[in-house]
Length: 272
Ligand SMILES: C[S@@+](CC[C@H](N)C(=O)[O-])C[C@H]1O[C@@H](n2cnc3c(N)ncnc32)[C@H](O)[C@@H]1O
Image 1: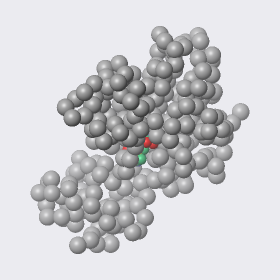
Image 2: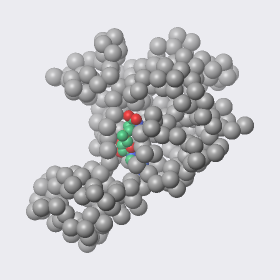
Image 3: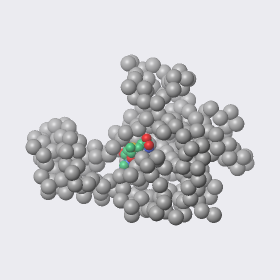
Protein backbone atom coordinates (compact mmCIF):
# COMPACT_ATOMS: atom_id res chain seq x y z
CA UNK A 1 0.00 0.00 0.00
CA UNK A 2 1.42 3.42 -0.85
CA UNK A 3 1.03 6.37 1.50
CA UNK A 4 -1.89 8.76 0.95
CA UNK A 5 -1.48 12.12 -0.80
CA UNK A 6 -2.16 13.90 2.52
CA UNK A 7 0.55 11.92 4.31
CA UNK A 8 2.96 12.52 1.43
CA UNK A 9 2.28 16.27 1.56
CA UNK A 10 2.88 16.31 5.31
CA UNK A 11 6.28 14.61 4.89
CA UNK A 12 7.10 16.82 1.93
CA UNK A 13 6.49 19.95 4.03
CA UNK A 14 8.59 18.53 6.82
CA UNK A 15 11.56 17.85 4.49
CA UNK A 16 11.21 21.32 3.00
CA UNK A 17 10.96 23.30 6.23
CA UNK A 18 13.55 21.33 8.22
CA UNK A 19 16.16 20.58 5.53
CA UNK A 20 15.13 22.58 2.43
CA UNK A 21 14.92 19.26 0.59
CA UNK A 22 12.41 19.37 -2.27
CA UNK A 23 10.47 16.13 -2.71
CA UNK A 24 8.69 16.27 -6.05
CA UNK A 25 5.32 14.56 -6.54
CA UNK A 26 6.08 11.02 -7.66
CA UNK A 27 8.48 10.43 -4.74
CA UNK A 28 5.77 8.69 -2.69
CA UNK A 29 7.56 5.38 -3.08
CA UNK A 30 10.82 6.86 -1.80
CA UNK A 31 9.07 8.38 1.22
CA UNK A 32 7.37 5.11 2.05
CA UNK A 33 10.53 3.03 1.69
CA UNK A 34 12.52 5.43 3.89
CA UNK A 35 9.82 5.69 6.59
CA UNK A 36 8.84 2.01 6.85
CA UNK A 37 12.02 0.89 8.73
CA UNK A 38 11.49 3.71 11.27
CA UNK A 39 7.83 2.68 11.70
CA UNK A 40 8.99 -0.88 12.46
CA UNK A 41 11.65 0.33 14.82
CA UNK A 42 9.19 2.32 16.95
CA UNK A 43 6.58 -0.46 16.80
CA UNK A 44 3.84 1.16 14.70
CA UNK A 45 2.14 -0.62 11.82
CA UNK A 46 3.42 1.26 8.77
CA UNK A 47 4.62 4.57 7.30
CA UNK A 48 1.10 6.07 7.54
CA UNK A 49 0.90 5.26 11.25
CA UNK A 50 4.30 6.92 11.68
CA UNK A 51 3.01 10.06 9.93
CA UNK A 52 -0.04 10.04 12.24
CA UNK A 53 2.31 10.10 15.19
CA UNK A 54 4.35 12.96 13.72
CA UNK A 55 1.16 14.92 13.14
CA UNK A 56 0.37 14.81 16.84
CA UNK A 57 3.62 16.75 17.36
CA UNK A 58 5.94 16.97 20.35
CA UNK A 59 8.38 14.34 19.07
CA UNK A 60 11.35 16.36 17.94
CA UNK A 61 13.71 13.40 17.94
CA UNK A 62 11.41 11.25 15.83
CA UNK A 63 10.93 14.18 13.47
CA UNK A 64 14.71 14.59 13.11
CA UNK A 65 15.06 10.85 12.48
CA UNK A 66 12.48 11.03 9.67
CA UNK A 67 14.17 14.06 8.07
CA UNK A 68 17.53 12.25 8.36
CA UNK A 69 16.01 9.22 6.59
CA UNK A 70 14.84 11.44 3.71
CA UNK A 71 18.37 12.63 2.91
CA UNK A 72 20.31 11.00 0.09
CA UNK A 73 23.78 10.14 1.32
CA UNK A 74 25.36 8.77 -1.84
CA UNK A 75 29.12 9.46 -1.83
CA UNK A 76 32.50 7.94 -2.70
CA UNK A 77 36.24 8.48 -2.28
CA UNK A 78 37.82 11.21 -4.42
CA UNK A 79 34.41 11.62 -6.06
CA UNK A 80 34.80 12.89 -9.66
CA UNK A 81 38.62 12.96 -9.08
CA UNK A 82 39.24 16.35 -10.80
CA UNK A 83 38.34 18.55 -7.78
CA UNK A 84 40.94 16.69 -5.72
CA UNK A 85 43.58 17.16 -8.46
CA UNK A 86 42.71 20.86 -8.49
CA UNK A 87 42.99 20.94 -4.69
CA UNK A 88 46.45 19.33 -4.52
CA UNK A 89 47.96 20.90 -7.61
CA UNK A 90 46.52 24.44 -7.67
CA UNK A 91 44.45 25.55 -4.69
CA UNK A 92 46.87 24.37 -2.01
CA UNK A 93 50.07 25.62 -3.73
CA UNK A 94 48.43 29.07 -4.12
CA UNK A 95 47.40 29.08 -0.46
CA UNK A 96 50.85 27.91 0.65
CA UNK A 97 52.18 31.16 -0.85
CA UNK A 98 49.36 33.33 0.48
CA UNK A 99 49.35 31.91 4.05
CA UNK A 100 53.11 31.87 4.74
CA UNK A 101 52.65 34.12 7.77
CA UNK A 102 50.06 32.03 9.59
CA UNK A 103 50.84 28.59 8.14
CA UNK A 104 47.17 27.77 8.70
CA UNK A 105 44.59 26.49 6.22
CA UNK A 106 40.90 25.97 7.08
CA UNK A 107 38.65 23.86 4.90
CA UNK A 108 34.91 23.23 5.23
CA UNK A 109 33.41 20.08 3.76
CA UNK A 110 29.71 20.94 3.86
CA UNK A 111 27.17 18.09 3.55
CA UNK A 112 29.95 15.54 4.00
CA UNK A 113 27.70 12.46 4.33
CA UNK A 114 29.65 9.46 5.72
CA UNK A 115 33.00 11.23 5.53
CA UNK A 116 34.57 10.06 2.27
CA UNK A 117 34.87 13.67 1.05
CA UNK A 118 36.67 15.22 4.07
CA UNK A 119 38.92 12.16 4.43
CA UNK A 120 39.76 12.40 0.70
CA UNK A 121 40.64 16.07 1.28
CA UNK A 122 42.85 15.10 4.24
CA UNK A 123 44.65 12.42 2.18
CA UNK A 124 45.22 14.93 -0.63
CA UNK A 125 46.77 17.43 1.80
CA UNK A 126 49.07 14.80 3.31
CA UNK A 127 50.49 14.31 -0.19
CA UNK A 128 51.63 17.96 -0.35
CA UNK A 129 55.14 18.11 1.21
CA UNK A 130 55.03 21.92 1.52
CA UNK A 131 52.28 21.57 4.15
CA UNK A 132 54.49 19.65 6.61
CA UNK A 133 54.20 21.35 10.00
CA UNK A 134 51.24 23.51 8.94
CA UNK A 135 48.09 23.85 10.97
CA UNK A 136 45.38 22.21 8.88
CA UNK A 137 41.75 22.34 10.01
CA UNK A 138 39.09 20.41 8.16
CA UNK A 139 35.56 21.02 9.46
CA UNK A 140 33.10 18.48 8.06
CA UNK A 141 29.37 18.96 8.59
CA UNK A 142 26.09 17.32 7.70
CA UNK A 143 22.45 17.43 8.73
CA UNK A 144 22.29 13.68 9.24
CA UNK A 145 23.22 12.56 12.75
CA UNK A 146 23.47 8.99 11.49
CA UNK A 147 25.96 9.89 8.76
CA UNK A 148 28.04 12.01 11.15
CA UNK A 149 28.28 9.14 13.63
CA UNK A 150 29.51 6.85 10.86
CA UNK A 151 31.94 9.46 9.54
CA UNK A 152 33.41 10.07 13.01
CA UNK A 153 33.83 6.36 13.57
CA UNK A 154 35.66 6.17 10.23
CA UNK A 155 34.72 2.53 9.69
CA UNK A 156 34.06 1.48 6.09
CA UNK A 157 33.04 -1.84 4.52
CA UNK A 158 35.09 -3.40 1.75
CA UNK A 159 32.30 -2.44 -0.67
CA UNK A 160 32.57 1.23 0.36
CA UNK A 161 36.36 1.11 0.12
CA UNK A 162 36.06 -0.26 -3.42
CA UNK A 163 34.23 2.91 -4.46
CA UNK A 164 37.19 5.03 -5.49
CA UNK A 165 39.89 4.53 -2.86
CA UNK A 166 43.27 3.84 -4.53
CA UNK A 167 45.11 0.83 -3.07
CA UNK A 168 48.10 3.02 -2.17
CA UNK A 169 45.87 5.22 0.01
CA UNK A 170 44.23 2.20 1.61
CA UNK A 171 47.62 0.84 2.67
CA UNK A 172 48.85 4.18 3.94
CA UNK A 173 45.83 5.56 5.77
CA UNK A 174 43.64 2.62 6.89
CA UNK A 175 43.76 -0.25 9.35
CA UNK A 176 41.93 -3.56 9.11
CA UNK A 177 38.81 -3.63 11.30
CA UNK A 178 36.90 -6.92 11.16
CA UNK A 179 35.81 -7.50 7.58
CA UNK A 180 36.17 -3.77 6.79
CA UNK A 181 38.65 -0.96 7.30
CA UNK A 182 39.07 1.97 9.66
CA UNK A 183 40.61 5.34 8.88
CA UNK A 184 43.83 5.67 10.87
CA UNK A 185 44.32 7.99 13.81
CA UNK A 186 46.38 10.57 11.86
CA UNK A 187 43.57 11.11 9.33
CA UNK A 188 40.82 11.06 11.95
CA UNK A 189 42.62 13.77 13.92
CA UNK A 190 42.67 16.06 10.87
CA UNK A 191 38.87 16.20 10.55
CA UNK A 192 36.31 17.62 13.01
CA UNK A 193 32.74 16.46 12.37
CA UNK A 194 29.89 18.74 13.49
CA UNK A 195 26.12 18.69 12.95
CA UNK A 196 25.05 21.56 10.73
CA UNK A 197 22.02 22.53 8.68
CA UNK A 198 22.92 24.56 5.58
CA UNK A 199 19.87 26.76 6.27
CA UNK A 200 21.66 28.04 9.38
CA UNK A 201 24.69 30.30 9.87
CA UNK A 202 28.01 28.66 8.88
CA UNK A 203 29.70 26.42 11.46
CA UNK A 204 32.60 27.42 13.72
CA UNK A 205 36.06 26.98 12.25
CA UNK A 206 35.82 29.77 9.67
CA UNK A 207 36.56 31.91 7.86
CA UNK A 208 37.46 29.17 5.41
CA UNK A 209 40.08 29.10 2.68
CA UNK A 210 38.23 26.40 0.77
CA UNK A 211 34.62 25.21 0.93
CA UNK A 212 33.62 21.91 -0.65
CA UNK A 213 29.83 21.94 -0.97
CA UNK A 214 29.10 19.21 -3.45
CA UNK A 215 26.05 17.27 -4.54
CA UNK A 216 23.68 18.85 -2.05
CA UNK A 217 22.45 22.04 -3.81
CA UNK A 218 20.73 19.73 -6.33
CA UNK A 219 18.13 18.88 -3.65
CA UNK A 220 17.22 22.55 -3.02
CA UNK A 221 14.96 25.08 -4.76
CA UNK A 222 16.67 27.93 -6.70
CA UNK A 223 15.84 30.38 -3.86
CA UNK A 224 17.40 28.09 -1.25
CA UNK A 225 20.47 27.54 -3.43
CA UNK A 226 20.99 31.34 -3.51
CA UNK A 227 20.48 31.62 0.23
CA UNK A 228 22.95 28.81 0.97
CA UNK A 229 25.62 30.11 -1.43
CA UNK A 230 25.32 33.60 0.10
CA UNK A 231 26.05 32.08 3.53
CA UNK A 232 28.99 30.13 2.08
CA UNK A 233 30.40 33.33 0.56
CA UNK A 234 30.23 35.09 3.90
CA UNK A 235 32.20 32.24 5.50
CA UNK A 236 34.89 32.37 2.80
CA UNK A 237 38.17 34.32 2.88
CA UNK A 238 38.37 36.90 0.06
CA UNK A 239 40.93 34.81 -1.88
CA UNK A 240 39.25 31.49 -1.07
CA UNK A 241 37.80 28.75 -3.28
CA UNK A 242 34.38 27.10 -3.48
CA UNK A 243 33.98 23.68 -5.04
CA UNK A 244 30.52 22.51 -6.17
CA UNK A 245 29.35 19.14 -7.50
CA UNK A 246 29.73 18.21 -11.16
CA UNK A 247 26.05 18.90 -11.91
CA UNK A 248 25.95 22.15 -9.93
CA UNK A 249 26.75 25.74 -10.81
CA UNK A 250 26.45 29.22 -9.33
CA UNK A 251 25.32 30.52 -12.73
CA UNK A 252 21.98 32.29 -12.40
CA UNK A 253 22.03 31.55 -8.66
CA UNK A 254 24.80 33.74 -7.24
CA UNK A 255 26.52 36.34 -9.41
CA UNK A 256 29.18 37.04 -6.75
CA UNK A 257 30.74 33.61 -7.25
CA UNK A 258 32.68 33.41 -10.47
CA UNK A 259 33.59 30.13 -12.12
CA UNK A 260 37.14 29.34 -13.16
CA UNK A 261 38.39 26.13 -14.72
CA UNK A 262 41.25 24.49 -12.82
CA UNK A 263 42.57 21.00 -13.60
CA UNK A 264 39.39 20.13 -15.53
CA UNK A 265 37.36 21.10 -12.50
CA UNK A 266 35.01 24.06 -12.02
CA UNK A 267 36.12 26.10 -9.04
CA UNK A 268 34.39 29.27 -7.83
CA UNK A 269 35.97 32.43 -6.44
CA UNK A 270 34.59 35.70 -5.12
CA UNK A 271 34.07 38.42 -7.70
CA UNK A 272 36.65 41.15 -7.24
C1 LIG B 1 24.60 13.17 -1.85
S1 LIG B 1 25.33 13.59 -0.30
C2 LIG B 1 26.80 14.42 -0.81
C3 LIG B 1 28.02 13.94 -0.06
C4 LIG B 1 29.35 14.55 -0.54
N1 LIG B 1 29.36 15.99 -0.43
C5 LIG B 1 29.67 14.12 -1.95
O1 LIG B 1 29.61 14.96 -2.86
O2 LIG B 1 29.97 12.95 -2.17
C6 LIG B 1 24.26 14.91 0.24
C7 LIG B 1 24.34 15.17 1.75
O3 LIG B 1 23.66 16.41 2.02
C8 LIG B 1 23.10 16.32 3.32
N2 LIG B 1 22.07 17.36 3.44
C9 LIG B 1 20.85 17.42 2.85
N3 LIG B 1 20.20 18.53 3.22
C10 LIG B 1 21.01 19.21 4.07
C11 LIG B 1 20.91 20.44 4.78
N4 LIG B 1 19.82 21.18 4.70
N5 LIG B 1 21.95 20.80 5.56
C12 LIG B 1 23.07 20.04 5.64
N6 LIG B 1 23.23 18.88 4.98
C13 LIG B 1 22.21 18.45 4.21
C14 LIG B 1 22.59 14.90 3.39
O4 LIG B 1 22.42 14.46 4.71
C15 LIG B 1 23.65 14.12 2.61
O5 LIG B 1 24.59 13.51 3.47
